[in-house]
Image 1 (spheres, rainbow, N blue to C red):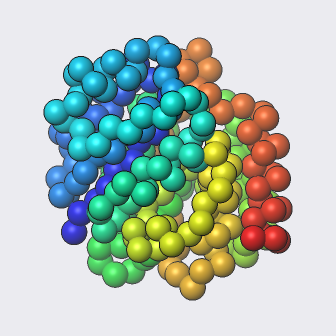
Image 2: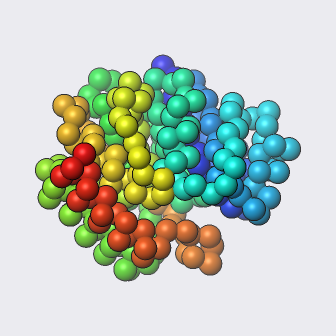
Length: 229
């Protein structure tokens, strides 16, 4: 069994090397690392080319900043693993927890696994209140229309059987990937599991990029992909 780790990267010069090293040092599965530079202007691409080129299996370069969803689609199209995991290029999520996501699929229980920031007793940074409220409301709205009972629809950590995600026609270019993929897998006859994960959230001063506009976009995606696609 091989896992493909897809890392969209936009202006993450401070963390991209650290997250790749962490994957290499903690993940024992047969793996490939695919990083998609999404038009970075802070030196991230130089780090990928000059420091990480021998450590990363594939470096894909977008000619401009298209967004996380676009980069994930591109990474999926170049992947060769049996399981695909999405990994942000920052340090909010811990690659040492991949087994939580992979083992339910490997053991035949699940087809898709979400890593929830709001389940379990693992350590989590005390963070932004209104982000927590926003995540809760978006997840509940998504659950109402998809008829599944997730606790964290917006989580980065999602693992998929590659045979499942590769047949889904994804459209969203930005953070709308999360509600879109959730709506579309909910319509499939597949087994979706959720596991609690650690979360080391960062502030906007530390580089967090998602904002209130993406919240409104998520609402649009929840309605659109549950009702019309």
